Image (cartoon, rainbow, N blue to C red; front, side):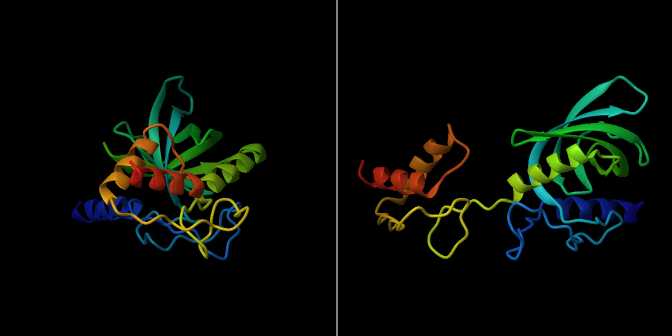
Length: 202
């Protein structure tokens, strides 16, 4: 029992570790390589990526549907956080959605942590949904960096990069960024520089 609890804790800790996107990979193509960060009983066949998404779950042969959140995903499966878990070996039908992209697949519960969540392997996924899954992973792994030259950006620079303004009031800069994110989810470099400049001129 103690060993099972330790494995559960190790697994959940591993989920919270960030997974950097490999620099040698094109950002629109998810990598198909083993994930070596977690060495427990549920070793994955492909790299996982932390994310936030919703999933609709229905057990095969039943009409009852439940909703939960998935917190990591790969080409071969996902981890769902939910108190209402299913036993290992259960076959489920999943509808996953994040970043405006939906993927449907059958899944088999590989590992179950009662009242916490479960690791689910995708099975019998159609080619259409495999393509959707790759699109979904591309939106998760696509780099989006707001700072300067020499660092990958989500979009190529269209001209010379303007310098970052001198920050004389860090508190105002942070407050301006907080206000920006109250109504937006993404910060491009141009917006970043504009927000900083305006915050220092108040």
